[in-house]
Length: 110
Image 1 (cartoon, helix red, strand yellow):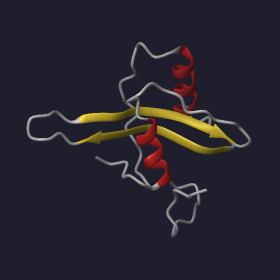
Image 2 (cartoon, helix red, strand yellow):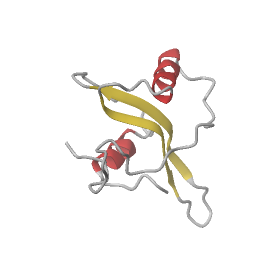
Image 3 (cartoon, one colour):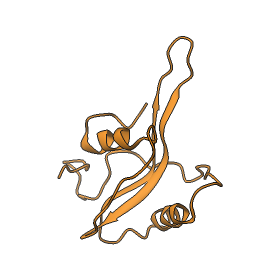
Image 4 (cartoon, one colour):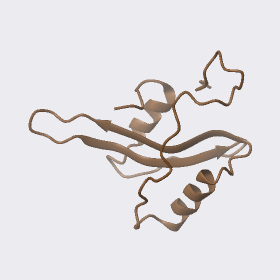
């Protein structure tokens, strides 16, 4: 499993990316389970988490006559030690983009 921590850091839990803003707008149409997980992670309740994402975002720049494309917007979840995790979503929901960022095949910054 790939580590996403700074190798020179004194703490192996220090993330590579800076903190994301806490005032991210939440979609009011979010499923209650999604809201519950977001609130759990943002409250800091990530004990025994082997992966946690807070407000992950990826925007592809637009071309000359096209607007920028938001591929992943405010994705927040954690995977606990020993947990079996499934990543589901419709076509174009950002699953591949997210996994590419997690595996280091894509930058998380735009």
